[in-house]
Length: 225
Ligand code: TMP
Image 1 (tube, rainbow, N blue to C red):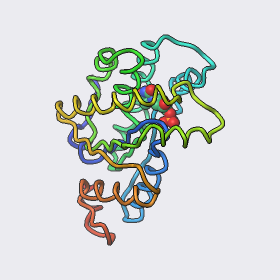
Image 2: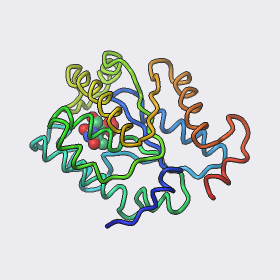
Image 3: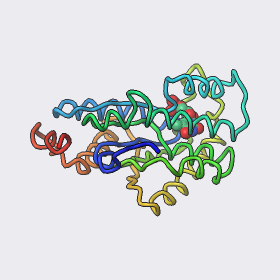
Image 4: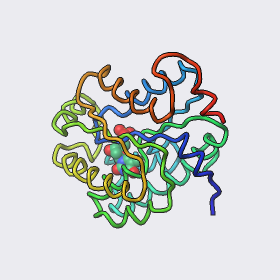
């Protein structure tokens, strides 16, 4: 079995989730910037990763390669396993004292592969991954998100309004299910301009970390204790 300090993970592992176009990547980078400005050691990461497994997933998402939905669910789980337990992975960074923020994690598989395979395969594949300390679930109308995505040049196979609406609904169901398992999930209204959403996120994350919203002191010692 993998050794992982779940208490440390609960203090220093934060995940951001939402349908495509919800703004998770933009907001993760803004949040990391704010935390670093307050003196915290903060690492950002994302799934799918840039590992060979992550690249294989990208080739399926782009439509270049085809794979059965259940195969894709396994690939995401394998990529996540490496992301967590591999060299320079989440577990290692957290052990070293960093705060790790990931753009997507288990809940993405439960939502997306929950739609493509039905809920049980992704649930089983992901049941052994430890819970983060905090998951932020961005809630935005799929119609708004799809307009944002439409401006991108390289579309992926999941980026249709019909599919995103189903993922949106599956996110809600699966977030409730994870909460029943003890996960800490905060729903963020991510509809609005970038600055407004940024402030909503900071309020939740700073409260979770015990970081004062102004000033630089106090918080770092807690994170590095
Ligand atoms: P992104 O890099 O724009 O977030 O795109 C990643 C895509 O992969 C997005 O459509 C969500 C999807 N995805 C899954 O279907 N399952 C997963 O477990 C993860 C991490 C991502």
